[in-house]
Amino acid sequence: MDAEPLGLTLRSTTGVTYRFDPGALCLELLTTGGPGPYQRYEVLHQPADVRAWAERSRLTPTPEPAVSAVEVAALRMLRDALFRVVIAHTRGEPHPPGDLAVINEAAARPALAPAIAPDGSRRWAGNPSGTALVATVARDAVELLTGAHAHRIRTCAAEDCHLIYVDTSRPGRRRWCSMEHCGNRHKVRALRARHSEEG
Image (cartoon, rainbow, N blue to C red; front, side, top):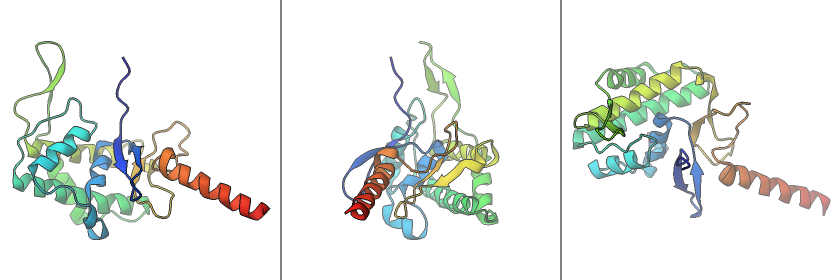
């Protein structure tokens, strides 16, 4: 039986759905909104929204944390801090110290702990909490930003796309958030430009 492909199903502003694999759990969180101009994309308003995001994420099996309003706010704060750190990272700028402190503080808390169920399947130990979910995402961010693929964190090459991913491909030449979305749009534009030059 084939494993479910990693990544999220996103919808473009034109209503087209496409698959986007950012390559890391922490980067999946960045699709839920963000600071400044990204606030208009906010989807994490209440505990049910956090559980819905966890269900779409690459966490396996899907955790079903008991999430409080305070933990919703903590996840949003982590996401916004991570957004600013990752943007600075892709630009070769220093990581904002206050935002690093937010990530490190969240990562220092107990994270989701995997366990083996009596039937041999994987499960999460104890009663998962929103705080453990936040810690798990923060630890993933620490691993990504200090790991072997830190130099491969990129923003989609399309001018009107701001999705961030880590290029885990062997050659390391990924340019687009998704070949079926921005990669395809680029191909269509290039083809039209070629036809207009020939015409």
